[in-house]
Image (cartoon, rainbow, N blue to C red; front, side, top):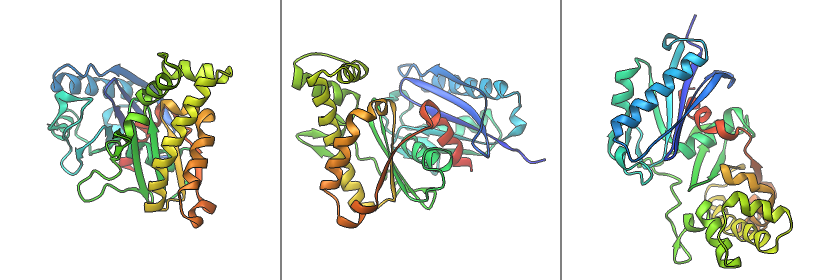
Length: 294
């Protein structure tokens, strides 16, 4: 009997989440979440990741002998071919770190590394809200602004493995991520209301009818829509998938996002493009990483 399970890891600046799925996308056992503690030495962080993988395998009631491969989604930029994390702001002690070498020493199974936003998009194509879609552009909205491109159900990484790393593109005197991120929501809210607030609080206020909060999410949607219009005009994807923690406020920003995007894209995609909210939730990262193995 062949190996029928896959281990996946979502490596973030705040937390590491590891889980096991089968080739039908069904999660086996309970995923494991541990703090990244990004200020600690790289080897310490990776040792914690290895422990999380082992714990996830144990929770699934299997052993490493049942695992066909391990996929890891990490913030970029990355040297995907050689399994190296290059220069990631949220993981400073893992810069220029050979993750493939360390994981290979701990587990004698095939290893795959890719950008976390790419993994998110691939996972939603394989097992999520856009299952069966071949071409998609994914955006994950949270601490930062991540994007991923899937073409013919394969991640498109570009010539240097940095395709879709658009968060640092110049925008309104800053970057796209200054406006399209959690801190972007906080910034917009302060500019409008003069008050401090966190995205979940601002969403709650908006749903209660607070005018400044409602306007904040509409402004956020406008900035996101402008960004998406460039992606649509360049790539012409069939579907855009929107996820990440800020997608919990999808009902508050999606109207303005779609309106702004449609006002700035070509007629043919305007008639055909679909925008869909992600459905894999907090499991999207590690499930997408598992899809690298598939």
